[in-house]
Image 1 (cartoon, one colour):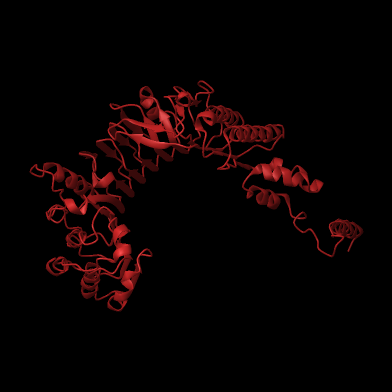
Image 2 (cartoon, rainbow, N blue to C red):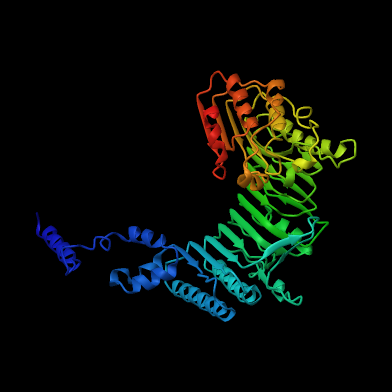
Length: 535
């Protein structure tokens, strides 16, 4: 061993000796780790302010290490019992501390922030906190755009509840609005902070604004943005075309993931045309448009939940996964699919199972509802996995009219079927729909049936469950094949006769069954007396 090696070893030993605790022989092995490991450890801490406070009290080895952490997260801390003055003071301190940390980071040369996430969560006093919160968010957006942040997320959650007529008029209302005071509605966040300049390096942006208005840019381009999420945001009626532009290839040429949730648009007559060449994943839960048109040649995943628009036009030839969940099983009256959807393997839809008694027409509207679902099934020629939610009117309004068996085509290519029963149906009323649906398949490998905690159970659990059923003919008279079935899953059982008959009918037909999973509702105990029969 040469002299240089010996000297280096002695130096390392002296450093380790200094790290030895005076109370024992415990060595601080963490501090001796390389910087990359320590930076990763600090990155896992939930709030960077805690990192700053903690490391400033440690050795020099740790003191300025936080300035090199690539991801910064800030989380406000709300107290339910806080007064108006206390909440406002807490928000002021929080915003100030976030800004102080960001200033310090901006002064650290060569230590850019790659990911910045900031949350503002308070439970009360919206009318006081909204303007100050919006002002702070505006400053943070400016900071992220100026300093080349790659991933930027703001999550503002203030107290509100959603209301609206359900016909295009939507608004957020807060419990503390008095005397028509809605000044906080005027609070707006501006995305056009750079006029026509583009934020350099921004790849992901997630904005949750608790109902604040968002002023959309007219010329700004997000040339590197691949992931965009807009939630709980108010959009002016005159700005829908700007929203369409923002999410289009003209503004975001590299956009691949888009989520628009709970966008409140003050318009009854605005169409949304989404043209995005590179978009591969799209989620639109609960957004109201007069109509929605998709021109997305590379879209692979599309989830549309509880939409309020009527016409739906889809041009997505590479779509692989499609979910179209409508309120109470009522899809749009007009669905137009450009060409076919040959790549769709997984489809999730809602389907009305009964015809309401109060409907007096000849069935035209009900046929339209079913035909929309049938259109989707026919366009998905390579479909192998189907998830259906059966819904309908309340049990008192049911009429024994089959609107599934006569309309849904035979689907021999589907091998996996999941049936979710809506809580709106009665515990003894879903059997006919499930039996009719099963007649459409003859090549199932996997079958799942999920029962909810039905509304009627709230009254029955204390008085004793109504387990008897006179609908045994559902399973005797309907012919369905389970010849290829390998797996069965049944959840939410309560011990009714119709559940028992369903199991018998399936098991009697499934000669190749390998796996059966059964679970009972945790909210019911009366089924215990029938466990032997189910076993």
